[in-house]
Image (cartoon, rainbow, N blue to C red):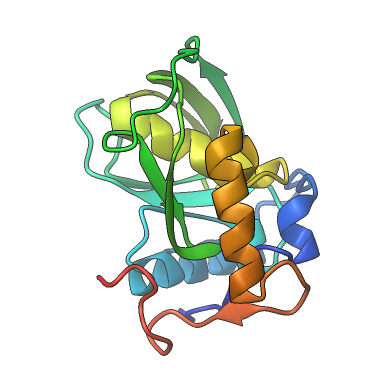
Length: 190
């Protein structure tokens, strides 16, 4: 397994819809194994293929949950069904997210409290489970990557302005920027 560089906001693959996986083969399983390794090295709870420069509809996760779902898994060609998202402003203490592709930053975002997650594993076998609370948040965050969205694209105006100001300060928003988990300093201080 190989740790892969993580793309940073501005890399084109992060901002376009990923394509469906059509072939479940050894190359796919190797990519999934590398994504698990990269997620582990980055101390992440999830990692989508576009975050490692691959425009395919795949994400991995590692999150202890109480929803009768595996604590670690992969979703290929996932589909999410969500409960209604509250129209209330996000709580700046309770609803804060971060992203490996917007490294070191945290902003509050309102998400659905429940998600039904369906898709396939790396062998093409069906996966179907429900996620609640923070686990549902992880599923929505990773799924958004497959549609070319980062969580900062969903922020309310006040936080969106802060995020874009920080991106500019960090020199992000251009192609070719990455960071290397396990080599570069952990942007979230784990």
